[in-house]
Image (cartoon, rainbow, N blue to C red; front, side, top):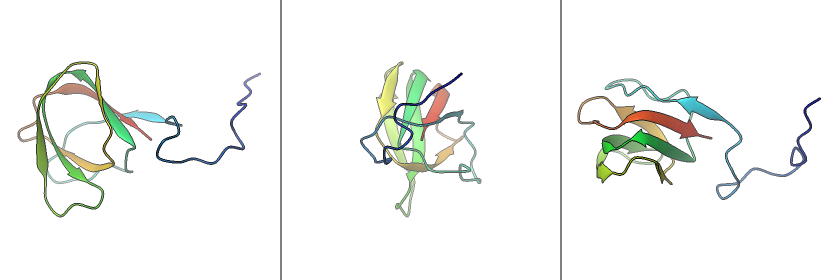
Length: 89
């Protein structure tokens, strides 16, 4: 039987992620939900739109195994060369 000793703890930006999901970069669609951070499996460039941003920004030369602490609403296909991206929420 699974038990979560933290189930009654409130979630916050500094709390560990409660869920993880695969991110498929897309030039027009937003993610189904925002992230607390993104795990980068294979490094490269990542073009994102932050939750409150009005334009995209590129993180260049992100190292494999990095975690970007950015609340993201979209990851764009054009310009993104990093892969194996995982959303942490």
